[in-house]
Length: 471
Ligand SMILES: Cc1cc2nc3c(=O)[nH]c(=O)nc-3n(C[C@H](O)[C@H](O)[C@H](O)COP(=O)(O)OP(=O)(O)OC[C@H]3O[C@@H](n4cnc5c(N)ncnc54)[C@H](O)[C@@H]3O)c2cc1C
Image (cartoon, rainbow, N blue to C red):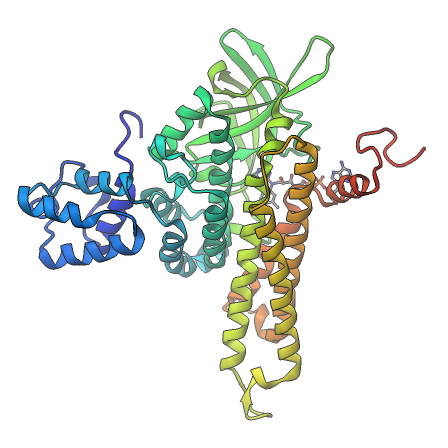
């Protein structure tokens, strides 16, 4: 991880090489390795590799690479990785589709055991998926919000827990990257190098009101000492870096919320509760105590007090990607229900269940709700995010997340009714989707706060006036 960065494109190339030759160990593939001499690729393997690269990186100029290679016999991993990073780019939706079947196969076991899917995270890091939102100048994929959401929707259909865990990383990183400057550069380079971020902004007693952290940040020589608690720290087991909030106190005694991003500390953080929940069971969303944690000054992100503004201006990355995860579960549920109802034959009618009017009506209801969810998400993804009205932007994105997750929940619930009692049986993935999709209603932003702010905005009632409703 530490040290000089590998060439951009290397992680994607390693994935392709291992996919073609599963015996290869990724850690043994060096940039100087020759494909033919060291990695044992024969001409047929090279043809298969070329076909794969054409599929995944349609812009890569393979022809010139093959010409130079056959003339000079320089067929190093580095030369091909450079080609992928210079002219080609990873198609992250295609990559998600490729990773999805293995994740789907492992999903039931991780759900049953509430175990963290380390092997999925390894695949995501090794394939470069976790570097998706790192800008290209820092060795990442430079994916935009539309691509991020489309890819996350695919992953969520396979294993919602994995998608939700990596979502904390990809969207958090995108928000930091947009800040630019030194704060962003080191993080981006670390992620291109394999780092994985988990984020903790909600706290017991604060819930989803993330702009009021009660974790304290006391200024000391060279940095801050943090004390507090964090609940639901999704992805904590696999994270190498932590992104979290705390508050200093200004001269008037008022809290100034701050964000910190640091390498996962060896001391000062203790797991107080292992994640064992009804849904999203494989997310490792542990509860943590932060105890006299020294954080260097350089790990703070942005100026003290600016956290709410930073979050509001970049909120489309958060709420759109959250919505994408739950829309992805809903789409997978619809596909699953349709496939089952076309296959399952009810002997009393002597035809597949698909011929029953109740099945048809509910499947149509599912499709209509899903279309509404995806359309609202798409409108938010493609909206103008360059806003001079951060609060209005925050409200628009929050309302979209609230609506999409509600619709996604309705889609899966309708699916349970179509499938009947068998959908409750653990062998049917629909019951896992049902438990996972509920989380969409519970993750931030808190529904009642969204409805209050959006309603007041629509009615032109001051949003932050006190008292909130009387007067
Ligand atoms: C699966 C899962 C994973 C999560 N992962 C993370 C993570 O990685 N990082 C992270 O920071 N958090 C995470 N969270 C936690 C999440 O961020 C919320 O903090 C948490 O779910 C909400 O807290 P709470 O349940 O105490 O509800 P509260 O936020 O306390 O809400 C309870 C009720 O009160 C209402 N309410 C809340 N505040 C107000 C208010 N100001 N005015 C009026 N009504 C209000 C809500 O609408 C709701 O009905 C995760 C949650 C889940 C379910």
